[in-house]
Length: 188
Image (tube, rainbow, N blue to C red):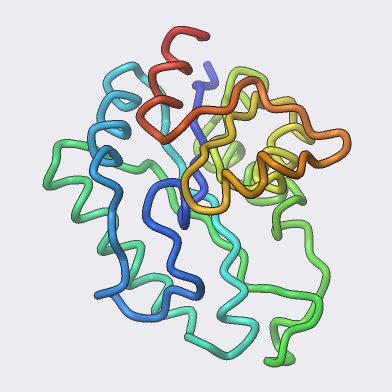
């Protein structure tokens, strides 16, 4: 049987927004992030990080750094008794300075390719899942596959909330990931 999942945007949702995160010392967790992921784990949700990483396409950092950052996130979560079931990222951008990454793809949010790939890899039921992010394109990707969206006001969330995106309808807008996790538990 396919499982439920919560897809989390990384920057601005799980960790603090740092522009192009290019050094591990700039990777800062929100104080509630580990607890929120642990709550979702204990409720039986798969937790999956889906993140656009255009810094690769722009030549700001290498894909190896993305792997290092995700290893750091995994270790920090595990130290707090939480875990992520999968990390998915898109290194592409249609205006990339690094030619190998210059393309329109189906994985760069708002396209739902990362969610579909995770669903296949991890046996996830997208219709019973949620997407949590601080940008409208996070929720748009989820909406495209029938998942329910939660906008958080951290990161770019307050700015996004002030300028609603046409056709994108969040289930709810909350202050942070812990509030999103609490709402998801009540709504599922």
